[in-house]
Length: 416
Image (cartoon, rainbow, N blue to C red; front, side):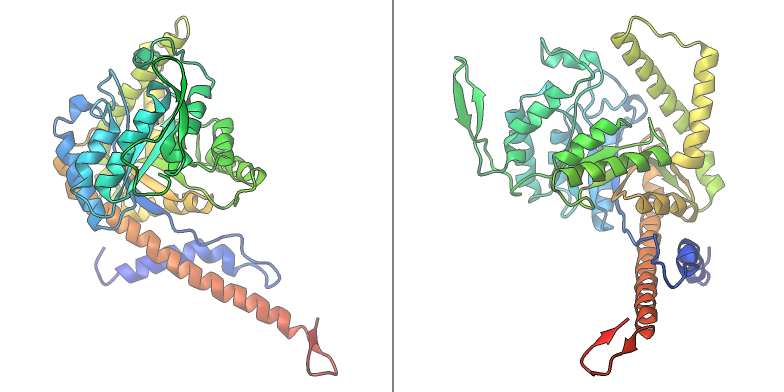
């Protein structure tokens, strides 16, 4: 796309989004709204395919920091090459903290039942100090039974009571002025405050959710954000879950339109759709194959036995790859990816965490990061144009109603 054609292309995207707005009657306000998504970078790659992953994290974070991205998301994973580069996201976040200036550094996620909440509070308060108040934590309840060797006697169940109790007892969530009661080495209750204290009065937190509406509702009730993905839901199901989240916030006397909704999305952009697909298809296939094997291993650990034939695995894998490329990933050109960004922003997503390390080599990832920045710019430009059009539409709607009003005999009032 030449520089000469760029404004025309950007205008056409905005025009397509607002077509339904300008076609509404004068008596009906538009349902479409301007909603500016933030863009972030996330990592959850396979360490066996990413020997230089730590350099990639730092360099990507520096790029995102300079380009005005919102956050860097780092996972907690144990005993598996799948995400195994980050057994402790606080350590990685501390390393990145001194290399960046404004980027928020987030755990995506911290498996809270594996840790004492006071220890989690200490670690992330320290990162908050090192970063000047730029941390955030998404809490998870855990999903692999082997991880629970860190907490002997703790049982992995579908219940989230361990995570919920940990959140309630986390000093950085309760607020830096509050003490929290724990049992000491003699089983006596003792009130403690952790040190160092974080820079932020309260470190923002999210709940990691796959597609369970109950998790979305719980997050809404406790004023947490949502960190989710497309593993167990499509766009329609995600939209329904966000509605559940909004209603839960309202039931807790919270602003239903508040809260953060962050979606992790596989991302690789290039100048053309085909160029991006050609580079991303094989790594994405290998990545999803690793994910499928890990999911089967998890199911086998939780149930007696679930065996998938090679034919079943191949079918599931091919279907997943095609679905991700067509509907659930940002793989293509920035212009093509803008359609999914629009759809997500319209259902209430507030942040797109671009998952970039799914097997593509580090040099290629870094070379193509400017395309994500271009997508971010396209979205922001479009939303500004949409806001202006909606303001004009609203103004026209009000003027139309005003024109139908008839003046009374007195000059001091108008009535319809």
